[in-house]
Length: 240
Image 1 (spheres, rainbow, N blue to C red):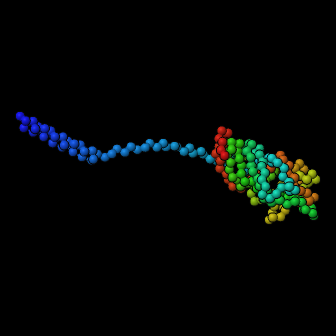
Image 2 (image 1 turned 90 degrees about the vertical axis):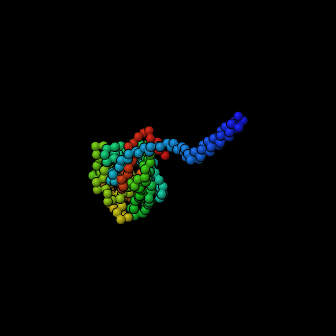
């Protein structure tokens, strides 16, 4: 009886050892489960932009005085957009109240011999009321109906202004600022009307060697030499 019990114990022990070996082998063969981390995918919102074509004229009003007596080369000034600017498909991209930044490229004080003072400027950027800012390549131009025309949306477009460069030039009995042509670096015939409140055209020989005094509030055009792309204006969009 004792021998039978011992045999049973031996068989049970052998079976236990075999079972443990099989379990260990199965555990070694089973591949570990690798859990992938969940990554959140953020969809990028694409804001459509609209193009304002080159040749567009933005109507602006000067915010501070410019004078050939005091202005210096490299100094900046600002003007406020007075009429909305539309893209080529009729979307408002530059609203009234936007600020255009200008730069004085060169300045010449009035000299003896009837030579008037001159100020040559360009325009480098526009900032919308919501903070959106874009670089621009703009030149000074007049708003004379002979050379510029307005469409039914209020945006002026150039006609014969593409190949001429305009500057502020002193002249007139009241010392008002004229828009004149700079041709080959010299003074051409004055082709703009007097901005500073003096009416009529004045030829260069009639100038009195006066300095340029462009008063705050003076209106003029900013001619876009290159197209600029902007999103549709949204007052709620605030950008640095």
